[in-house]
Length: 97
Length: 239
Image (tube, rainbow over all chains, first blue to last red):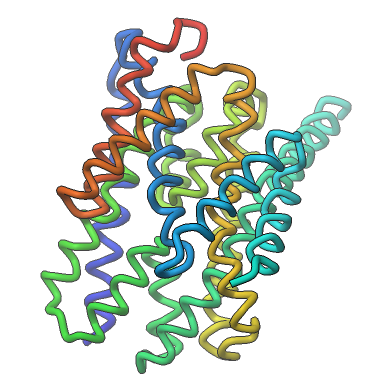
């Protein structure tokens, strides 16, 4: 029964997501732990971008690298994030392969 | 009377801003969700099973992995454990997010954590000022629910209609989520170069760890250890 596997996958995904809501309220953190937790979003972004971006197109890491650099350029030019996303899709679309 | 009107205005403004902040996420989720719906349908799953995956699990990478493993005949326990490992990173992210939303009622913020993905976390965490604002919870709720809706709608569209997006275009859309992550990271880095160091550190660690352990654990270790550099790089006022 596939649905039971889906429910199992759901439970092991949702429990770790919700647990911190209950834990964090009970704890008072030292300043250094707060600094650590504040850095987590930026560390997570780093870890999510690289090396994953290399595998955007199978066996063609260059597409991911150049696409990533193009997104970097657009965001550096302060383009709205929606335009960064659309522009980068267009860049990869028209990239000669 | 006047107070109520003001409150309503603040609420609707927060919701609008949440939807605006969530829009790039909606944009990047739809093609990925369609691709998931298509792949899952081709593997022989029913529309009900496919939509339940997106409704109940709501984690792209784990859903693709689940379909793959079901395809090759992996067992229940094997799939569930692999899912746990792959999604454990959300525990770390939720921890950071909940620390930011400390002064918001548990009943209001706990449901949001159930819908915390890499992307909803990243967008929510970058908009950290809203956590301090009145009715800020509505901002995060609107942002997170719009992304969830896009994911489910995209999944069902993919399962029902098949590949509505031409192959070359859907291939190019693989870059969308990365473009969004980069677009989220660059503005804070421009303001504060130390943020760039933290991200760079996490990239290096993730690259090293992904040679040794599964990609799920590599992201967890890269995020936790990379984030620890913030203990030294951040000052009190950043936290």
